Every structure is written in C-alpha cells, then in structure tokens.
Amino acid sequence: MLDVAIADSSDSGGSSDSGDSSDSGDGSHRSSGKSSKSRSKSSTPEPPASRVEADALLSELTKDIEQINDDTDSINIVSKYYNSFSKEFMSKLQNEKLTGKTIFLEYDYEGKHFVTSIPGGPSVSADLDWYGPAKLASMYPTTFSVLKK
Image (cartoon, rainbow, N blue to C red; front, side):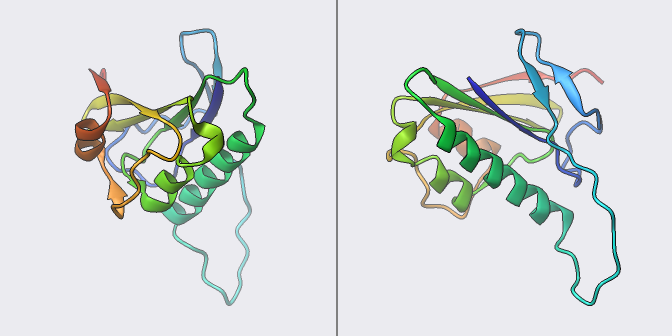
C-alpha cells in the first residue's frame, strides 16, 4: 500500500494535532508531509495555505501514481484537515494505472474520522467541482468513527 499523508495548515474542523508522524496502528508509519519553509518578503503575495496544501496533496498523489506497480493493491491518502476533494483531485484518481486498485481517503469532519474506499480508474466520478463527506459517502463505501475529545 502506498501512503500519502498531508496535514494542511488550515483548520476545517479537524483535530489540531500537528505532529510530524504517527503510527496508524496497523504497523504502517505515516508522515505528515509537512515541510518547514521560511517566509521572505516579496512583491508577489503567497498563495493561501489551503492552496499550498492542496497542491502538495496533488503532487504526492501524482508521485504515488507514478510508483504504482502490479504489487500495489491500494493507496492510502490521509488528510488531517481537508474533508472536501476537488474535481482536479478526483480526476487524478481516474488514471488508468489505478484500475483495479483501491484508494482509501481518510479525513475528519464534525468530530468523526471517515474512511472512504474508492475503486480507482476511469470509472471515478469527477463531474462536480467539490466532493465533500456527504457526497463521497453517497457514492462510495464509507465508514466513520467518533473522534475522542
């Protein structure tokens, strides 16, 4: 299984834990994907943190797709704060290399941790601008657990 873990800096109701890594309990280790960056003054305004993190998530997914081989059966995408996925993100899941693979999207929303299982490949829907928790749950198998406070 390939893991993508991005903890973005905008808080959309998820946990505020900012640790750099975690043990998922299944023996795999997930890195937060965070990098430190120095701020410099420039005449060009920096994009919002949410856009930077969305770009990082897409970049990591693209790298994982490139690394897929016959032994890869799934990709696990862990988003600490994002709970809605863009049309651009969903379009990446339509890649032919993902046919027969399962994409697990993990995200938090309103005090619950969701895991959505999406069968990868051309059949993935990418018609909408955004896919939030309710939409994903209506389209694909989704489980959730209540987060401890």
